[in-house]
Image (cartoon, rainbow, N blue to C red; front, side, top):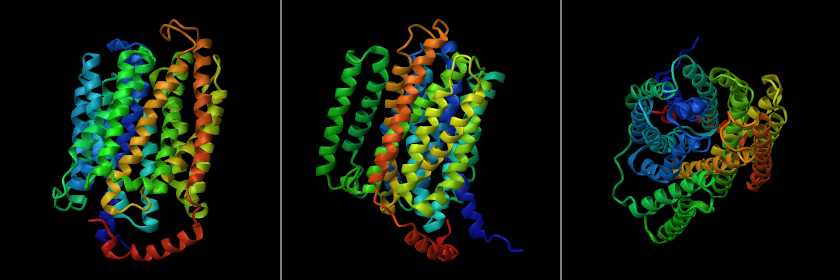
Length: 488
């Protein structure tokens, strides 16, 4: 019986730490949804303003991602991983103790800052620490951890809200962060010296951060205040002007925050476009699902969390087992396109299974199909985004992809929540269940249609040759056994 070498043990530990980091990001994203009704009641949010508990995170995360990605490339992925987790822990502590809407929203903004540092750091470490077949497997483990985090978030959100308080959906992040913060300094290989020689392009960082944040702010305030409101219009116009200024600045600077030549990388640009569509539909679909099982079916938070389990557990299989096999056999292009279409079909089936007198079992077939498609997409789209990008620019490439994802999520919440709430007035408690359901189904089916269109968009990727890729990976498998390929 052979035993694992120290190098392999360290490689396995680092992969666990990186995957667990994605687990935390996913837990934090999904754990809040189930707790939203209790948060709204306790802190006095309206049905429309309640989306800010989710959207505040998206504003900071999306606005700071390009800054975070370039910081990873310049300062080091390990340093930014540790910093991001530190922000998560501190902000979660503040969120758990929040006594009013302002404090909770502020805590979510700081959590978004933590995510903007953590996410590109994890992607960069995966892309630069693994090669060939090991890299695809690492992305599969990372994607599975993300899906598991969604499942755990939904379940933990219900359990903690029911048995303790919604405040524990924030407190739980602190011990989770410590699981990584304690071993990471020794387990992950040290960063090289921070690169300050070529500057950091602070003007572009400021323009992109404020510009993206303004766009997201306008999108999430539009449904509540009206699209003609001065704050909404002002934020959208300001964001558009600043982003134009950002691109002009980037075209003239010698050391850009986001090298514009990356926009010529077809896999990255297609991945960004598909991620935008994917997250637009996904954010709306999660809202629809949560609203249906609680205000319409009357589920408790813990029951709502359990209702999410089939969807997210099947996503783990899709990401961890099916995605790498599909990419190896059919290629990245076919995997991504198929995943988007399957995801859309699954959401449509789930929506069509909803009725005022419905049950969990009517949602089950659609949830399973939805989960399989989501797992295929999540792994293949980020693998596509990182392909053809140098190690020195993996941080900003991952940030570009995730920025598109976060803006898509904000668009999904703004537009699809507005559609979902367009069929009734007042609160959920005051509205007829049939009126609530009409809006939810309309929003959900629109999201499903967008996913199918996203599957067609994914065909813009160059058709890859799985046989040639397999030959390269076979050669890499042998190289991966050499010590120099181990992490650390």
